[in-house]
Length: 609
Image 1 (cartoon, rainbow, N blue to C red):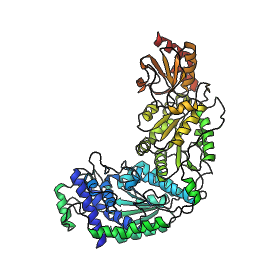
Image 2: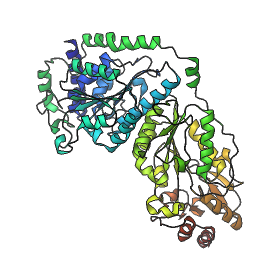
Image 3: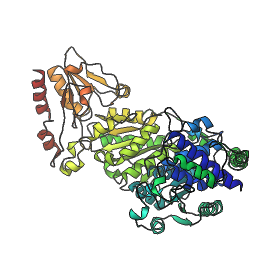
Image 4: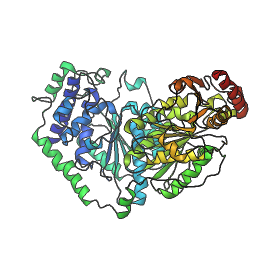
């Protein structure tokens, strides 16, 4: 009876908050309350007094539209107040429309864009496996509640396949399987057999036919004993207890007056935000007591404590001049592999080309200490997994692919930027110099796209000195992800570039009395410098796309092998590429777009005159 009372308390608090906001998703709150309660009361180790404890179990609500249910559960643990729950979806509230990363309030990640919670959970489980291989005291689970929508998103295929292949056995997914979604029943959308799907990619599959505490508890116990990641399909009824239960009508609309029908069904005759003392006592005797005991028993080793110290790095290595910046980047990554054991990552099946290779061998079932991750051709999944790794504790993940495929990663990069996660994105083959691969592989608009993302460092180094600066910025960043954009082709090393100046933002390579300034980044900076010297012009590096504009924009010319969109912020006159690329040798394509030195010089003289 006490379990039932606790579940009803969760349901009523959730739908009351949704009604007060006149916005939200009551269907999942009523359908998934039993699995939420069972997980928290009987299994989850999470100590509210020590929310950043490294060995806590992680819970991810991938179905982030069910945030009211999560907030209600956190209220029962004393992390969220009644007034905060009543402000659900209100302006300047911590109880936002979808969960937003806040460890002090028990929210492990920002979720809502469907599928990404699953991907981040895989990253958390990967981090747990990696650290457990090094520190035996690390041993915890990663739990997820997901929806049908999560499983329909393509990212779920990418990340769950990765989890199964790498046997991430601490990952336990609970599927709110209610056969209904926003527009329709699921049988009009898909006919896939989830059991066969999950088993084929290496998961333990468990079906819970009755949505009861006992059945869900037994399923979680079985999952925890498995040596595979586990997928628990729990058959539920969306909006259970409302007059529209089992239909799409209850997915995303407040109940309104129908809340009285739910209260009657649940025999609830109290205020919508009332919490019975018996329920508070239940959680005190279960999750809170269990978690405090687990926290007090946990004894971190000296090695783990040392590992958890955040040590900035200064990159002091000699790198060959006049080589592609992807090659310079590869040398810096090798340096980081040797000097920082929390540096971990890889690429989407392109390490041989992007030179982004992690240390200690390939991570797999037989070498979980390996820090080179084979993500496969799964760019979006790779981005979400990196988010999960960064969320775990002290890992500094890096991921890599060709720059044009940053499009595939954009939603994960956006979430990383929202959560301020220190992830490094290594993007190579940054311009039309990709040449023979043609317009499908030649990035034009991607630089502007990334520069438009708030809180994202965008760095396009011109030579090996600026590459070293880029990685110092990326690794030492605490509150920003960083994208490092690199060339396929060899570049010209410049005497005038400066690692220390680039770290601060825009800087002058030539500063004189001319009224005119050339503004460039990356491989185009070399030609700008040559022309600046010949024509006695100022030259500015914007390889670090962050800083203060100190030049006269009305007398400035920007030069980049990319779209000129957005560049009028820096220069009145913009030279770039506002069409898609062409197929052919890189140098010929450069000349076609008049980006070679002589063509540039003519265009610049024409503008000045």
